[in-house]
Image (cartoon, rainbow, N blue to C red; front, side, top):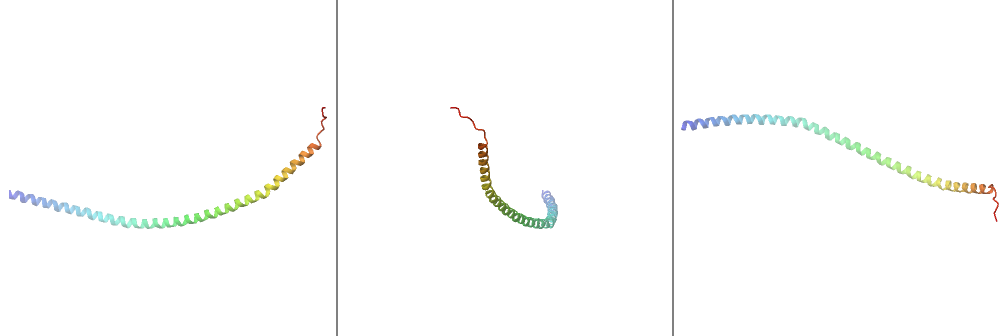
Length: 117
């Protein structure tokens, strides 16, 4: 019985040693994989950060251009309103005067009707 228990513990120990060696190989391969990922990902992240900084700078420039265009549109709108007010009043007066003259001329040259008593 002691021999069977001794053989069992020897086989069990050999199995544990084999399992630990395989596990060490796995951890070694995982360590190499993590190092490779670290070497490849860090430069990509650095380039991504640079790209994002450049995009933010361009968006800032676009924001300034939009603000400038908005200011120009506001100035054009004010000019349009001023010109409309400056022209609309005299045009209305001229149209009213022309309508009055037209009515007066048509009344003067209209044939006279005889009044029926």
